[in-house]
Image (cartoon, rainbow, N blue to C red; front, side):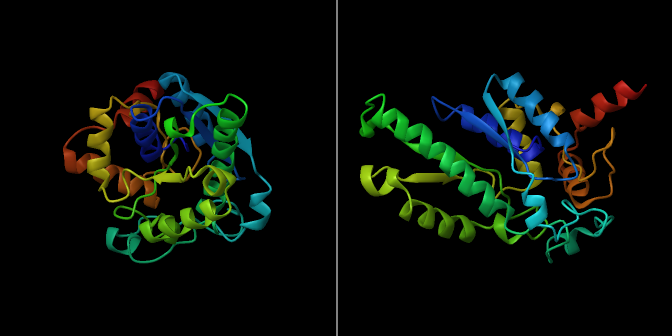
Length: 241
């Protein structure tokens, strides 16, 4: 749960699919820490359990990125949409989703093993799902946002999981927006009554979105295609008056 548009819509979706939902937000040393504040606000609005996990040491490992090392690398701005979808920009954080997925799966496995071994819950009544918000359509070319990455990663995770190997309960990765355009994601959020107005997509952490980074451009295009105003921008503009 990053506090962005995509993850908020997926969190709203997840809330309709499972009986016990926990949201995780990772502080990995990213420059746009405002997303953590947004995630806290959004999960409070949705009345969902939420934990912020400090893995800021990752900044020292995945340092080749404008999001973890902005003094060294500049975030690309005003890129044409065609260019955004064709190459992997410097905003890619090395193996970020691999790290996030492994940590989320570990947290999930702990919850489920406790339910089975401590609370004696019947395994036939259990499913274990990690909901994530990667997108392979309107995205910045990140390799760890593609279906083939998640298909391969979950096989590895289950091979190393007690939950899967002993109790035959496989961890699943649910990626409900992976094949949707930004406009379709926004429509999905509206249908779910997702708190879009509290989301933050900009790679910067100012009081207003920059409107020039890839994330801002893709978000704006989605609302433009639908012919509606971004509720987050509307509220920000009202607050600045």
